[in-house]
Amino acid sequence: MPSSSSSASISSSDLTAHAQNQTEVFAVHGADPEVLAYAMAKYSRSALSMRQSLREISSQRAEQFLNTFYFQYGHRSIADLAHVAFAIERLSLLAAIVLVDEQRWDGQERSTRYQNFMKSGWYLPDFGQEAEIRQLYTKTVEDLFSAYASTSSAVFEALKSRVACPAEMKQDAYERTLKARAFDVARYLLPLATNTSLGQIVNARTLETQVSRLLSHPAAEVRDLGNKLREAATGPAWNLAAEANADLQAKIAALDPDLALESEILLTREVRTAPTLVKYAQPDLYAPRTGGDLNKANAELFANIPVALAPLVDLVERTESLEVELAATLLYSVGHHPYRQIRDLVASLPEARTAEIIEIGLQHRGRHDELLRAFHAGAALRFDILMDIGGFRDMHRHRRCTQIIQEFTHLHGYETPHSGDAAGLAEAGILAEYQASIEAAFAASRKIAASNAPEAAQSALYVLPLATRIRALFKMDFAEAVYISELRSGPAGHFSYRKVAWEMYLAVQRQHPSLAKYFRVTDFNEPIDILKR
Image (tube, rainbow, N blue to C red; front, side):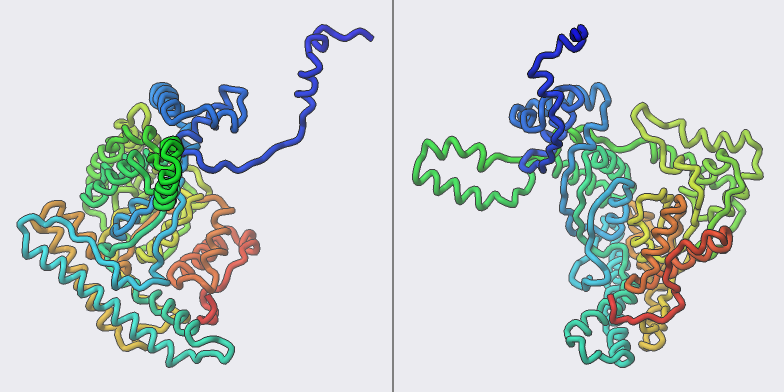
């Protein structure tokens, strides 16, 4: 049978190409992040293979491409392909919480469970001419660290007297485990000024929005962190192999000066991880302007309405319209009232007033601004959680849900750690000392906030200890509720978030009893072996 015109136009070599069906997979190493992003982006614009693309692309060509397609044409997905690793050291716990508040974020931080923070140091804001306030701040932080040390020691000794070392367990492992349990209690006394360190790996798009968000923050430390992140991304990166390469270059030069010149570019060149994608990052204007207007609306609506009492975990059933949820979430993000209380008030407002609140959340949005997180609405389950900051930090890691986090404040009081898997403060003989330390820190925070020091309201937050309660709204689907409840209720976890996970399960059980059987949770009230981590 004669060939059709379409098949006749295909050569034998083309047929061979069409018949190649062996998938090839290879890892790529050694390409700069932006060069690699350009090479991957070329798949949509070129038939070249990855190897061919990377061989022909230079840093200069990558920059030209990104300047055109990323900045001029707005193809922001290209930046998702450039991943950059950062080490961020000696930042306060407060700054760390702000830094990692990205929904697309990967990283690890120093653990308050396995490390003693006595030697980490702490952040000191600029108090200008307010020497007395500076002295109060310093004394408050130092007193909290002193209480942290004495609590660690007292709880450790109490645990040793209660829990014997098993014959099969080595003494150093036994003591290390008990110290970790003691740190679980002592961490409640760490102030937000405490220095920590973390590593993060983020794509360049997340980095750009992260930098913009940090640059617009009211705290000087956080703004400075935004500048340093941008400088680290656009400037020369620290090269792990630099010293070894320099030694090799010196040996080559001693043997063959001509070859040394040839190898110099490869061995000693500076690598700039994201010289193009974040260089134009500027302070975010949308969120701060919106926050200011929402604060005014919130103050008007709740001027004479006290903050209602709320449980540790409140699963707020869905009774409102999408419009009411959006308006209520916007107000929740700038206030301190529980979500249920806000939702019920907004539901009673005229539709026109609800629409005005939603409009506040949108009127300052720029051309390239993503909608505020408060507009992530429609999740089936909404858990309004009021817990200690230390435990919240562990819950903060769950990024498959939407988190609306209220500001730090002393208004909600503080947690006193108590659990069957840790020595109680009364048992250790330090309950009164613990309470006095927290209350003194709260009093100092109020005094600093009322002072004339620069950024007084922000500086006052640094002396709040991790025992301070913080409110956050977690919106999620059923699968995420199961995942968090199962993971965080496990016996190896910290008793603070174990209790939250257990209460999340109980809340679902009450509202959706037929689904409770699908949760594989650990009962928080059951005794556990504290020597198992």
